[in-house]
Amino acid sequence: KTGITHMSENYKVLFVGPYPPPYAGPEISMKYLLESPLTKRFDVSFLNTNFRKSNAKKGNIDIFLVGAFFSFVARLMWMLATRRPSLVYSFVTATRLGWLGRDIWCIAISRLFGRKVVLHMRGGHFKINYDASGRLAKEIIRGACSFVSCGIVQAKGLRNQFEGLIPEERIVVIHNAVDCDQYAMHNPADYDRNMVLFMGHLSPSKGYCDLLKVIPDVVRACPDVVFHFAGTKIKKETNVKQNQLTGEQIFFEDPEVCFERYIKGRCEKNYVYHGIADENAKLELLRKCNFFVLPSYSEGFSMAVLEALSMGKPIVTTPVGALGEVIRHEVNGLLCRPGDLVALKNNILIMLNNAALREQISIENKEYVRQNFTIEVISQKLGDCFASLLIGEGK
Image 1 (cartoon, rainbow, N blue to C red):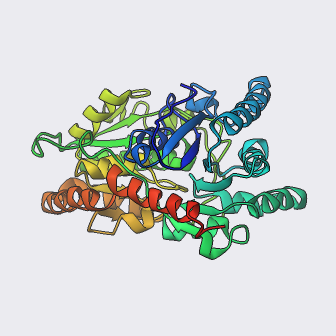
Image 2: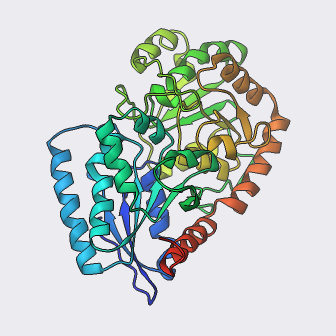
């Protein structure tokens, strides 16, 4: 899927970003936006940046990456010349490789064609990666950002991602959106109270190894609990390497070694791996689980958490990225700091044993999402951002 166009009499906007497959947060978010009321408000064209079909292969430096770069540049120039958009709206990565290999070129080429540029940061660890970059890389990124009309982040606490790169007054907070009709719990009583769900990359940075370590203690207290895992197993971390809250290096362990040490032969009946879940499988897992757990070390705004919230599921997570603002302790779920295994275990046990708390959180979450994170609400905010720039209020 390399091009999607919706005609209208309004301003032309070129969307640049990934589209499924694979299914991860940025891909899903882009799909929502391309199917949102934005396409009636603006004349939208789309340039798909995805060339990987697996989340596990993202970030790999190989011949395919080189080919993808030249293909991207050629397609971008073609669409700028033929579609003639007034504004380019681009999802940007949180990695140096992504910025130097694509994002700065998108900015430079778009400005060369005289287009305004809006960047949407899709991660929460860009600032750490930028600060760790060499002087030349910093100068290149800072120079590119000087031509940007607006930078969008996913939470107030993520405004610092563009600190020193984009002026404060040109940074806008817009949350992720979720399809509340699709992610709806039609029968709130139809769930398995012993089922705990983790969905996302099975990697140390997502807290997968931490969760494996606490499972034996949780099982001793609640022998019938079963932890269900869905997502891509990531053995080598190529992206997130620091604790977002402290900046400290994450201690990376081989997830398979952790499984051998903490689960195999001890708690195998309490562990189920579903592999990469398609849309229907994901919906079924979310509907059946008691609550959702994601003890991550770094996030922008987890789509998996937002989808679980939409279905009224309580959340056990960490206050990283947008989650520190969206998840209020004992209101939408329970929070603990990344790497705090004792607090993680205790929060899981509290959620398993306190039905009243779960019911209270479930009611809160469904209403909370429908007021703040629907596709209509978020697309309206994004459209207002575009409009303010296109009618001359922005750079």
